[in-house]
Length: 359
Image (tube, rainbow, N blue to C red; front, side, top):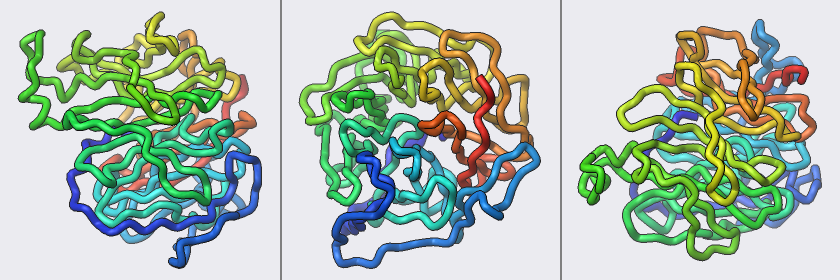
């Protein structure tokens, strides 16, 4: 998922729909009492008899009415997939969270605040130890904060700040005790910040932080403004020792993949070839990264896999007419789920899955 700017939509009444499938406890059945509102289910064919592509990818879910299905993240038991559904197209409009079976079908809406955007990150956003998934939303505030939600439960706010920045793209540490996230500034707000380097492009100098699941003061990990870099979409490794993210220098178009230690030390670059290498997440054994890239000048980004320590990327998807991004590896290592927009990111995306490459 290419980074979404901070939401500035109006406050609306909240609608919470409980009863999710595939919770972190390993249950494959829906549970929990609803709020009295009907659960919204939308048709979406799964891999059995579903639409397929020449590269072996099969459709999981396509929304209708111009909505865009994005950011698939597997439940810890692998039976379900968390997703964000944008109402106005790719990264546009209000956004709701839903859960669908990992082999496709009709998603169940679990959080839908009218005129608000609740957005999850692909990768490690759903955690077994916490029994919850993390996401960002601007409910109750004019900027994004980090929240978590247990399947069948109510949203729980993790962060609260008032400096005008947005906290977004959260993912869990494997023990469920910490959440890493990115801090972004709205362009009009960033231009007015005091920048010691004399630059006023702070909107493109996002930083990375971590916070305890129960809240408290965030801990800095990567200082974007202090280093003149833009750092986004952090994903915690399943081994717990490192965090992967995408980075670029100020004023540059190319993104590269980096990792940093869970304590903020040991910064390492993973990819060095030119291109927009984005949306990284980990294989379940922590040895590989899957990401989206236009490596080699592709007309639309495709999925690639690279060793976590660096090396030659291996291409996974092969449909140059579609943008493929926001990949997540299944817990059993067999599948990679991703978003795909035919004709590029100007169009709504659908969710697909493809067999993971042999490693």
